[in-house]
Length: 152
Ligand SMILES: [Cu+2]
Image (cartoon, rainbow, N blue to C red):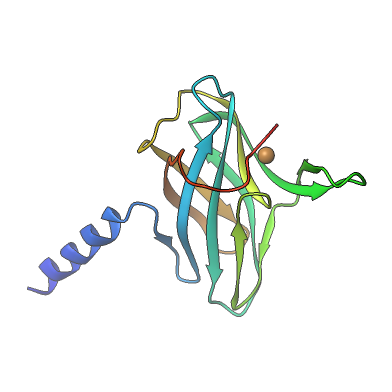
């Protein structure tokens, strides 16, 4: 019965869709949005928790859903206007800590979408971490999720 039990547990986990975990990293609450049917770009948000005693860093994201994937953040310019900036070095997830990618802040940017994103679509991506290595993640598209409007 042990095997069956493991199988059932795995199925339950995969039903959650957007939960991915390595030994040290757990990713939760992942979702993606684009700005409508004509959108050429989209963004993904998620929470990464690091239970290890060393910092890790998200260094690359690859996916078939876009021609290019970048790390972005928002900064306020001198007029108080929020602007997007590319973050070359990726995002650090501190030891025993977490890093949240959220609306109006750090995010994963998909440029040159290869299809229209509709609610419920699942985006398959691979997150590459400096220490934890590659983590596969299924990110659901959730256009109605509220937050700061994402503009380019
Ligand atoms: Cu962006």
